[in-house]
Image (tube, rainbow, N blue to C red):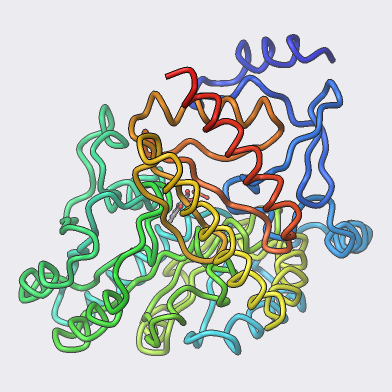
Length: 402
Ligand SMILES: Cc1ncc(COP(=O)(O)O)c(C=O)c1O
């Protein structure tokens, strides 16, 4: 099909829930994708933190072919080796004792909320969940109720009962609130990705952990965007030397195939009985086989160290661009390979992102005035240099136009 026909048919037949960039994506290899006209782009969106090993990775392609020839689906009525392998590897490499498999991020957050409430119901009937302003946890009703910005909730109210919000990065406000006898859990992202890559000060998660311990509350970490190696450790909480009680994963977990998970410690897991929760597709053999191979590749010190090093290099160079273009760039933020460039206005962000796209670099326009950069974890210094050159060129053009 011709590019304009694809765009026209998508707009005609698919519900208009997305504000799409007028660009088709036909295929990909490594960090690169091609549109239907054969134009090549460096994909530093990774499908919004999903294709962490890049596109068309030979190991994943092999697993998919192999699994398709064995069995695609069989449900949770039976025991599956592929589920056992992934669950064991997740437990052995995290704080968790048990894993619940699902399909998407929002579904993982729904599960986390239910498991927290189940624990709360056995611990004095506590049911409230404290979340943070600016957070993003998903689009279904539980996750949406836990999501901070009201723009996501407009037209869909009332939200679920029992959710409150405190400023992100401010542990003291959680301490004040935590005395409420109805509170059962605090849910937080280690870095707020959708909100423009907001990195809290070091010590924030540690303080939240202490408050939760003191007040007998659960700490739920939403690592859907920043888990799976993105910050240079397998899970972002490792930087802070703490452990959550519940953690949600999705996005990068399946390496490109939809796969989500809720990880739980023993005290939460022991409250959950057969019939408490479930899903037809959760733990689907194709999804968990891809997730297992993805995790095997990512859970490697050399790769994780390289994420940290490349991230530091990228951020340092972006900071130099900020010094050069002070009127355009207000801040550079991030950790590992999740980076954000905050521009002086939303309009400027759009202009610069549009220019970088036309020069062959894909990034994400988020939170109004932020360019969010999510390279594959196995990207190279040369690819980062290409991205930097492209951003520099776009800044130069916008600067001389102004
Ligand atoms: C931190 C976080 N939680 C939850 C979600 C929802 O995930 P999904 O879009 O797979 O439902 C997202 C998606 O951006 C996210 O970034």
